[in-house]
Image 1: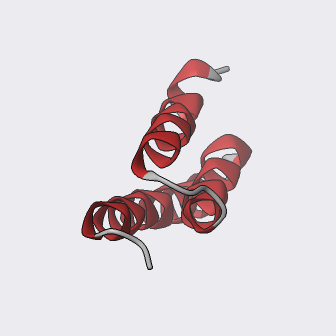
Image 2: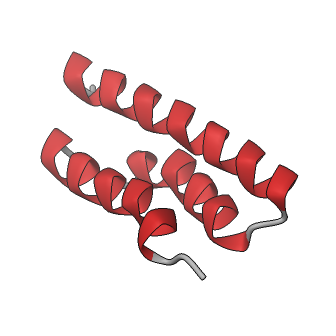
Length: 68
């Protein structure tokens, strides 16, 4: 059973992912769209808070790092 910290982090990453998906669809931007989808899916496959946090922060930063 996941810890409360894992559940809260997963929930927060899912909210950020949902916002990225909505933004990516509205702006027709592929990078935020894909990043948002990954933010909603990845926490299910990563055990522990630290891996979720590291991957989540990288996916959150990805649209800012890959600008045209």
